[in-house]
Image (spheres, rainbow, N blue to C red):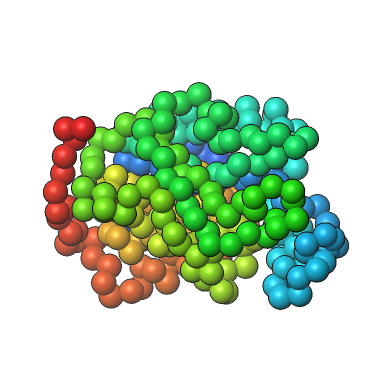
Length: 266
Protein backbone atom coordinates (compact mmCIF):
# COMPACT_ATOMS: atom_id res chain seq x y z
CA UNK A 1 0.00 0.00 0.00
CA UNK A 2 1.16 3.54 -0.74
CA UNK A 3 1.92 6.15 1.90
CA UNK A 4 -1.10 7.35 3.93
CA UNK A 5 -2.94 10.31 2.44
CA UNK A 6 -4.84 12.90 4.49
CA UNK A 7 -7.95 14.69 3.25
CA UNK A 8 -9.24 17.68 5.22
CA UNK A 9 -13.00 18.11 4.79
CA UNK A 10 -13.19 21.21 6.96
CA UNK A 11 -11.38 22.63 9.97
CA UNK A 12 -11.38 19.90 12.60
CA UNK A 13 -12.53 17.10 10.27
CA UNK A 14 -9.83 15.02 8.58
CA UNK A 15 -9.87 11.54 7.09
CA UNK A 16 -6.90 9.38 6.18
CA UNK A 17 -6.57 6.83 3.39
CA UNK A 18 -4.17 4.18 4.64
CA UNK A 19 -3.58 1.36 7.10
CA UNK A 20 -4.42 2.50 10.62
CA UNK A 21 -1.18 0.95 11.89
CA UNK A 22 0.69 3.46 9.74
CA UNK A 23 -1.55 6.44 10.51
CA UNK A 24 -2.14 6.10 14.26
CA UNK A 25 1.48 7.00 15.17
CA UNK A 26 0.90 10.31 13.35
CA UNK A 27 -2.20 11.15 15.41
CA UNK A 28 -1.02 13.01 18.48
CA UNK A 29 -4.19 13.29 20.52
CA UNK A 30 -7.96 12.79 20.54
CA UNK A 31 -10.65 12.83 23.20
CA UNK A 32 -12.26 9.46 22.55
CA UNK A 33 -12.23 6.67 19.99
CA UNK A 34 -15.32 4.94 18.60
CA UNK A 35 -14.94 2.12 16.12
CA UNK A 36 -16.36 -1.11 14.78
CA UNK A 37 -13.44 -3.23 13.58
CA UNK A 38 -13.74 -6.09 11.10
CA UNK A 39 -15.23 -9.11 12.85
CA UNK A 40 -13.23 -11.68 10.89
CA UNK A 41 -16.49 -13.29 9.80
CA UNK A 42 -17.49 -12.06 6.33
CA UNK A 43 -18.31 -14.81 3.81
CA UNK A 44 -15.90 -15.51 0.97
CA UNK A 45 -18.65 -16.51 -1.46
CA UNK A 46 -21.93 -14.93 -2.52
CA UNK A 47 -23.48 -18.38 -3.01
CA UNK A 48 -26.46 -18.68 -0.68
CA UNK A 49 -26.87 -21.70 1.56
CA UNK A 50 -28.89 -22.72 4.61
CA UNK A 51 -31.06 -19.91 5.95
CA UNK A 52 -29.70 -17.51 3.33
CA UNK A 53 -31.00 -19.75 0.57
CA UNK A 54 -34.40 -20.07 2.23
CA UNK A 55 -35.09 -16.37 2.67
CA UNK A 56 -35.80 -14.36 -0.44
CA UNK A 57 -35.83 -10.73 0.62
CA UNK A 58 -32.49 -8.95 0.82
CA UNK A 59 -30.31 -11.72 2.21
CA UNK A 60 -28.83 -12.87 -1.08
CA UNK A 61 -28.06 -9.28 -2.01
CA UNK A 62 -26.29 -8.86 1.31
CA UNK A 63 -24.18 -11.95 0.60
CA UNK A 64 -23.15 -10.51 -2.74
CA UNK A 65 -22.18 -7.23 -1.08
CA UNK A 66 -20.44 -8.87 1.87
CA UNK A 67 -18.36 -11.27 -0.23
CA UNK A 68 -16.59 -8.34 -1.89
CA UNK A 69 -16.82 -5.99 1.11
CA UNK A 70 -13.22 -6.24 2.32
CA UNK A 71 -10.64 -8.82 3.33
CA UNK A 72 -11.87 -10.40 6.57
CA UNK A 73 -10.33 -13.86 6.75
CA UNK A 74 -7.41 -13.88 9.18
CA UNK A 75 -6.25 -16.72 11.37
CA UNK A 76 -8.16 -16.17 14.63
CA UNK A 77 -5.06 -15.90 16.83
CA UNK A 78 -3.45 -13.44 14.41
CA UNK A 79 -6.69 -11.49 14.23
CA UNK A 80 -6.94 -11.05 17.98
CA UNK A 81 -3.28 -9.99 18.29
CA UNK A 82 -3.69 -7.51 15.43
CA UNK A 83 -6.88 -6.03 16.87
CA UNK A 84 -5.47 -5.78 20.39
CA UNK A 85 -2.46 -3.90 19.09
CA UNK A 86 -4.65 -1.33 17.33
CA UNK A 87 -7.13 -0.82 20.16
CA UNK A 88 -4.28 -0.53 22.70
CA UNK A 89 -2.63 2.11 20.50
CA UNK A 90 -5.91 4.02 20.41
CA UNK A 91 -6.09 3.89 24.21
CA UNK A 92 -2.65 5.51 24.35
CA UNK A 93 -3.73 8.33 22.04
CA UNK A 94 -7.09 9.33 23.50
CA UNK A 95 -7.71 11.20 26.73
CA UNK A 96 -10.87 9.27 27.56
CA UNK A 97 -12.76 6.14 26.53
CA UNK A 98 -12.18 3.80 23.58
CA UNK A 99 -15.58 2.47 22.48
CA UNK A 100 -15.45 -0.78 20.47
CA UNK A 101 -18.49 -2.29 18.76
CA UNK A 102 -18.07 -6.06 18.39
CA UNK A 103 -20.07 -9.23 18.82
CA UNK A 104 -19.97 -12.82 20.04
CA UNK A 105 -18.55 -15.10 17.32
CA UNK A 106 -18.34 -18.86 17.24
CA UNK A 107 -15.29 -20.98 16.41
CA UNK A 108 -15.71 -24.77 16.45
CA UNK A 109 -19.03 -24.29 18.21
CA UNK A 110 -17.51 -22.28 21.08
CA UNK A 111 -18.45 -18.66 21.70
CA UNK A 112 -15.74 -15.99 21.67
CA UNK A 113 -17.02 -13.00 23.61
CA UNK A 114 -15.37 -9.67 22.75
CA UNK A 115 -14.80 -8.97 26.46
CA UNK A 116 -12.37 -11.90 26.49
CA UNK A 117 -10.37 -10.69 23.51
CA UNK A 118 -9.00 -7.47 24.98
CA UNK A 119 -6.63 -6.90 27.87
CA UNK A 120 -7.79 -3.36 28.63
CA UNK A 121 -9.99 -2.51 31.64
CA UNK A 122 -13.69 -2.25 30.76
CA UNK A 123 -15.40 0.88 32.05
CA UNK A 124 -18.82 0.47 30.44
CA UNK A 125 -20.83 -2.09 28.49
CA UNK A 126 -23.77 -1.45 26.17
CA UNK A 127 -25.89 -4.12 24.52
CA UNK A 128 -27.18 -3.19 21.07
CA UNK A 129 -30.41 -5.09 20.41
CA UNK A 130 -30.66 -5.09 16.61
CA UNK A 131 -34.20 -6.46 16.74
CA UNK A 132 -33.58 -9.38 14.40
CA UNK A 133 -31.24 -12.19 13.40
CA UNK A 134 -30.03 -13.94 10.26
CA UNK A 135 -29.05 -17.13 12.12
CA UNK A 136 -32.33 -18.79 12.99
CA UNK A 137 -31.06 -22.28 12.11
CA UNK A 138 -27.85 -22.40 14.17
CA UNK A 139 -29.09 -24.70 16.98
CA UNK A 140 -28.88 -21.97 19.60
CA UNK A 141 -30.95 -18.93 20.53
CA UNK A 142 -30.62 -16.76 17.44
CA UNK A 143 -28.08 -13.97 18.11
CA UNK A 144 -29.74 -10.58 17.75
CA UNK A 145 -27.38 -8.28 19.63
CA UNK A 146 -23.93 -6.77 19.49
CA UNK A 147 -21.79 -5.34 22.28
CA UNK A 148 -20.23 -1.92 22.70
CA UNK A 149 -17.42 -2.00 25.24
CA UNK A 150 -15.91 1.18 26.67
CA UNK A 151 -12.26 0.67 27.58
CA UNK A 152 -10.27 2.94 29.90
CA UNK A 153 -11.92 5.72 31.90
CA UNK A 154 -13.70 8.95 31.00
CA UNK A 155 -12.01 12.33 31.13
CA UNK A 156 -15.46 13.88 30.56
CA UNK A 157 -19.01 12.67 31.10
CA UNK A 158 -22.39 14.26 30.44
CA UNK A 159 -25.11 12.52 32.48
CA UNK A 160 -27.94 13.62 30.17
CA UNK A 161 -28.21 10.29 28.37
CA UNK A 162 -27.76 8.02 31.41
CA UNK A 163 -31.50 7.25 31.36
CA UNK A 164 -30.97 5.32 28.11
CA UNK A 165 -29.56 2.64 30.44
CA UNK A 166 -27.33 -0.08 29.02
CA UNK A 167 -29.56 -2.00 26.58
CA UNK A 168 -30.32 -0.04 23.43
CA UNK A 169 -32.98 -1.26 21.03
CA UNK A 170 -32.03 0.24 17.69
CA UNK A 171 -33.19 -1.58 14.58
CA UNK A 172 -30.55 -2.47 12.03
CA UNK A 173 -33.00 -0.97 9.53
CA UNK A 174 -32.03 2.44 10.96
CA UNK A 175 -28.90 2.22 8.82
CA UNK A 176 -29.05 4.23 5.61
CA UNK A 177 -30.54 2.29 2.70
CA UNK A 178 -28.04 3.77 0.23
CA UNK A 179 -24.98 2.83 2.32
CA UNK A 180 -23.22 0.19 0.22
CA UNK A 181 -20.85 -0.91 2.99
CA UNK A 182 -21.65 -4.50 4.04
CA UNK A 183 -21.53 -3.86 7.81
CA UNK A 184 -22.48 -0.27 8.71
CA UNK A 185 -23.95 0.75 12.03
CA UNK A 186 -26.61 3.48 12.47
CA UNK A 187 -25.81 7.06 13.43
CA UNK A 188 -28.34 6.78 16.25
CA UNK A 189 -26.15 4.12 17.87
CA UNK A 190 -23.07 6.35 17.89
CA UNK A 191 -24.41 9.80 18.72
CA UNK A 192 -25.15 9.06 22.42
CA UNK A 193 -21.60 7.75 22.91
CA UNK A 194 -20.16 10.96 21.52
CA UNK A 195 -22.51 13.27 23.41
CA UNK A 196 -21.87 11.48 26.70
CA UNK A 197 -18.10 11.01 26.66
CA UNK A 198 -16.64 13.66 24.33
CA UNK A 199 -16.80 17.37 25.21
CA UNK A 200 -18.35 19.73 22.69
CA UNK A 201 -15.68 20.65 20.16
CA UNK A 202 -13.58 17.63 21.17
CA UNK A 203 -11.98 15.10 18.80
CA UNK A 204 -13.42 11.67 17.97
CA UNK A 205 -11.07 9.06 16.47
CA UNK A 206 -12.11 6.05 14.36
CA UNK A 207 -9.28 3.77 13.14
CA UNK A 208 -11.72 1.62 11.10
CA UNK A 209 -13.78 4.39 9.51
CA UNK A 210 -15.59 2.27 6.91
CA UNK A 211 -18.46 4.27 5.44
CA UNK A 212 -17.88 7.12 7.90
CA UNK A 213 -20.83 6.78 10.28
CA UNK A 214 -18.74 7.80 13.30
CA UNK A 215 -17.63 10.87 11.37
CA UNK A 216 -21.22 11.72 10.43
CA UNK A 217 -22.30 11.47 14.07
CA UNK A 218 -19.32 13.58 15.18
CA UNK A 219 -20.05 16.27 12.60
CA UNK A 220 -23.75 16.42 13.46
CA UNK A 221 -22.94 16.82 17.16
CA UNK A 222 -20.36 19.58 16.69
CA UNK A 223 -17.27 17.49 17.42
CA UNK A 224 -14.08 17.19 15.43
CA UNK A 225 -13.16 13.91 13.78
CA UNK A 226 -10.17 11.89 12.63
CA UNK A 227 -11.02 8.82 10.57
CA UNK A 228 -8.80 6.18 8.98
CA UNK A 229 -9.78 3.78 6.19
CA UNK A 230 -7.56 1.72 3.88
CA UNK A 231 -10.13 0.80 1.21
CA UNK A 232 -10.59 3.58 -1.35
CA UNK A 233 -14.23 2.56 -1.94
CA UNK A 234 -15.24 3.17 1.67
CA UNK A 235 -12.90 6.16 2.02
CA UNK A 236 -14.70 7.91 -0.86
CA UNK A 237 -18.11 6.93 0.53
CA UNK A 238 -17.15 8.24 3.97
CA UNK A 239 -15.94 11.48 2.43
CA UNK A 240 -19.28 12.02 0.69
CA UNK A 241 -21.36 11.13 3.75
CA UNK A 242 -19.40 13.28 6.20
CA UNK A 243 -19.40 16.19 3.73
CA UNK A 244 -23.18 15.83 3.54
CA UNK A 245 -23.43 15.98 7.33
CA UNK A 246 -21.22 19.07 7.41
CA UNK A 247 -23.57 20.79 4.95
CA UNK A 248 -26.51 20.50 7.30
CA UNK A 249 -27.39 23.93 8.75
CA UNK A 250 -27.64 22.79 12.38
CA UNK A 251 -23.87 22.22 12.47
CA UNK A 252 -21.93 25.09 14.07
CA UNK A 253 -18.34 24.48 15.13
CA UNK A 254 -17.84 28.14 16.02
CA UNK A 255 -20.74 28.03 18.49
CA UNK A 256 -20.46 24.66 20.24
CA UNK A 257 -23.34 23.60 22.43
CA UNK A 258 -22.36 23.74 26.08
CA UNK A 259 -22.71 20.42 27.92
CA UNK A 260 -25.77 20.27 30.14
CA UNK A 261 -23.87 18.84 33.06
CA UNK A 262 -20.53 17.28 33.78
CA UNK A 263 -19.59 14.94 36.57
CA UNK A 264 -16.66 12.63 37.15
CA UNK A 265 -17.57 11.84 40.74
CA UNK A 266 -18.40 8.23 39.94
